[in-house]
Amino acid sequence: MNDTIRMTKQRRWSESKAHSSWQIFKIMAEFVDGFEALAKIGPCISIFGSARTQPGHEAYELTVDIAKKLAGEGFGIISGGGPGIMEAANKGAQLGGGKSVGLNIELPFEQHANPYIDRDSNLHFEYFFVRKTMFTKYSQGFVMMPGGFGTMDEFFEVATLIQTGKMSQVPLILVGKSYWGGMMDWLKSTMLNEQYISAVDLDLLAVVDTAEEVTEHMLQFYSKNPLQPNF
Image (cartoon, rainbow, N blue to C red; front, side, top):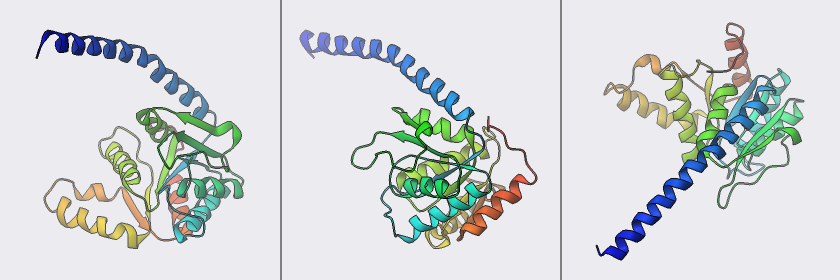
């Protein structure tokens, strides 16, 4: 490596470090704004699922029904704020007369705010990790609809936080036995069999098919447990 290349790389590294230091203030601002906004909203359920699911699809319409029923029981609904399952969740929240919250983040090709988010509850984030903290701190339960990598990431993050005691135990419900069944079979036959998890870890999960089952599971849990922030 000649001296010119070395000096150029050192300059770029120094500029990057300086940028990272100032970046801390942007991150802090996102945390503060998110905490202040969500602390005022009250008990909510987060619903996750694919941004690609279209209106009319069985999973979309089921999500609307789930969110509507949960909202009717007094829960607000939090989604990622975009299209697909997120839109269905916010739509159901409004139909059920509940608070409809969107935690938006700009993503290429698929993320834009859906029209069913309450105007005062449409929050925007630049950093994924800040957005995820908002979900995990204030959601009183998690409903996982069919989805892709993002949905799996959110599911396993919540499961890990509960498993390790880093957040309170709350309902974690997988909707669609035909969709989640293969994964559940693998968790039992492979991950559990090879002792990477314990049998009690699987007790964290409920797998259901209907909006009524989701609502019943939430109400049963909170007939015995307090509503409170998770950490």
